[in-house]
Amino acid sequence: MSRKNHLILNKELRLSSSNTRTEPFVKVIAVVATLGGLLFGYDTGVISGALLFMGPELNLTPFTTGLVTSSLLFGAAFGALASGYFGVAAGRKKIILILAIIFAVGALGTSIAPNVGSMIFFRLVLGAAVGGSAATVPIYIAEIAPANRRGQLVTLQELMIVFGQMLAYISNASFNSVWGGENTWRWMLAVATLPAVLLFCGMIFMPDTPRWYVMKGRLAEARKVLERTRARQDVEWELTEIEQTLATAQHQRLHLNALRNPWLFKLFLIGIGIAVIQQLTGVNTIMYYAPTMLKAVGMNDSSALFATISNGVISVLMTFVGMWLLGKIGRRTMTIIGQLGCTTCLVFIGIVTFFIPETIHGQLDMLRSYMVLLGMLMFLSFQQGTLSPVTWLLLSEIFPTRLRGTFMGGAVFAMWLANFLISFMFPILLARIGLAGVFFIFALVGIAGTMFVIKYVPETRNCSLEQIEHYLHAKLSSNHGVVR
Image 1: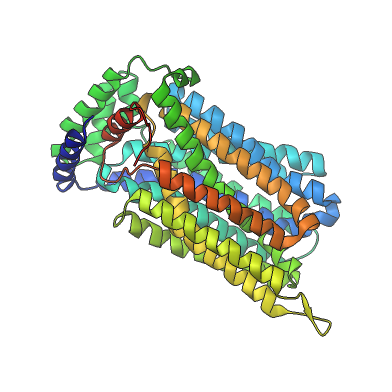
Image 2: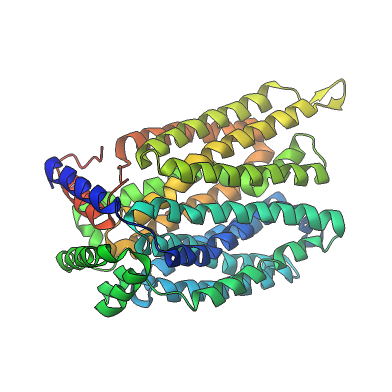
């Protein structure tokens, strides 16, 4: 596609989008579906406080602590891969319903686990649901939302993730304050069963996406969904655009053999890069191990749990900022700002922990503790205000419709594998090279990630999913294959 034609398409889209309003039903769909994000956030965040209490009962060592934490992430990698593959045949809605059941089983299993082996097994089960949700919910919302509101509605998933993490931190501190004791962690983990039941009940009444219905030849159902989620004048042109794009892509295979096509291979690698660099900032070491890190710099259990709530609050507030920014600036610009900001904050935490002494006159230096907490909060401001929301949005946008589920699953699989390795190694590295060394390593990786973003991340704002597909096909089929 020539640059002239691309500009014409964007002009036509803006003219159409200016008359497009979001029907109330699409907002209801987004809220119900993102209960999966709430579970994602709670189940990944709750372990940060539970580790402080389950350690003595389960006889955790630094090695088994890393296994308990990261086993969820390992399961998430394969859950993302499986949901992406089977979602093409079963549909996004059915996959989310199955994931809700897995969420409930995993939450109950971890809460009654009698030993480390059982805990790791049920964390793997829970991880399959977390990864499947991460791969499926953004696609479901992106395919069902109007182009002009896709950014805000897909980002609702990120808001629910960080809201779930904040609830986990509040739950951890509350259970410790009200009940305390050695069994506190079991109640922390069991609470996640309730939103899993709500997700299942809510999704029963939701439709699948119009693009999936068209892909399966169910045009009447696709039209019905569009009529409930679009202004009347936009239904016909969008249905026609979906049909035409899918018709031209009939030759695309619905599995990874499609990677033999050079432009699809390049696109898949870009998607993996976008997914992985968001994890290589070390964000989830802060989300999973914040109380552990704050204890390492001088806080007691109660203070560390209470201080961690501020991480959740900042994450929620800054996600609102991110949702607002998505309507003002481009995806590419937000990604660059996020990478640079996160890397700078990692350097700050490394400098604080390296140069400020742990003790002064034999007493723990609390200034050091609060400076580390400040660095975490600044990091999360950039991460949740820019990088995390735009990562999930880009992954839901850049892949072709027929391959979106499979490619999204593959990219999220890579994301969770990176998350697994980082979370597993963090307590071991913390014990061997200290907090400063760990964060300086993250900062170096962040610099490499920034270079990747500048060179390869595309701009997709104000384009329909079909226009993005045509544009990236043209760009990546060129000699250079670099999206600018």
